[in-house]
Length: 559
Image (cartoon, rainbow, N blue to C red):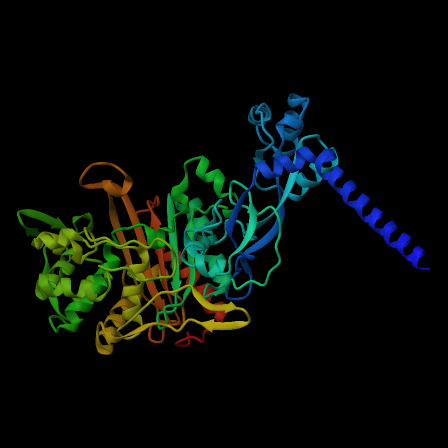
């Protein structure tokens, strides 16, 4: 019996040993070239983390997620018929045959051909069973919405780092902090899927998918109607700072960001709402009025005599089209968007006090929005203290800001005088725990509720009786202001002082005016239109009406 047991044990040892030898033969001899190729194309890293956190719209629609897939590489030393192989690969994946052949002529075991294959491409390559042609496994960042909200989300680069938008700003949170050892290809993607518990953070946004969709749709229509070069729409809750939509035109597909980089079109990655400065034109006049109202220098009924021109520092400043309006109230200055009326208001206030309110409305500092790369201007021209600089700034020319800065300033008018911090990430989940963003509202008022109410009435009159009529929505009080400003040559990348004949055309407003649920800025870059009255204002109307119907906001009055 003992001898029989020893023989049985010896038999199992022999079988086990033979299986190991067979496996080694398979790895070293049959598939040796493949694993040499794979090894040559990899490097050790301790930066490997679990799957990146996902990003969702407010309603749960997925903006960014993770997806298992394949990349394509070749082992040139394995390939005998290099020309035929290159041709076949080219036919399947759509890359230039010459580029593939050039890599196939290298004397090594690893050449990357394509970093991310479609399902169809991967299946076809598997069917062909081409010698020296291999597929590697990886986890890829996937953006199922394609170009939709692309400047908001940004993208994950080849090194596995977030760039632009949410991916850049929340990069560390989305990655999580746990680090383990893994294998990584030269461009930063993992070749094996490691399923460890992840402490990466998932993010739910304040952005409302239907409102974002409508805003982007309207910008695309503006391209057709007005041939805009670009444009932005921001929708925000003025009482909290929650961003409901942040739309840009044109967009890009973050799944294919490399194509834009290769074509040297990386400027499209920038979110112009937070990363590009502009001069708001007459949209800034209400801020000038707010300061003068708050300091008691004017009332809505204060009058002045407009002669069509004001001379300062030896230079004339005219109204639009050099029109003379005669005797007008401050309310009419906003209704008719009279430049000399804004100058009158600023002169009553004084340069020092005007600058104080420019600072208080946040024009000289970033908003702190949770998106990567926000810029701002210190508007150093105003530091010169010349009257003409302050005069032109009073009607929004010669003073620069980002669209989000203008939106934040207007929130203080809409909500009774409080400054809010705009934000797009509302809720976070990590390891089963949920955290919510608390709206940040400054305790100190920029203007009093009385001033905010007076100014709101004036802006309602702009929509009812002035150049903002195309923003009217029957049954609702809408407060708003048009703005058309010339684009300086410097903003067009031209090394020249002065202004071009191109324009920014904008409309900013909120509704219902006396209990605002939303505030909208529409900004169009060089539309083929006479002014914002005919371009941006109708777009505001269409989007505001959509939100009112979508949210079923009851009317202010019966028709």
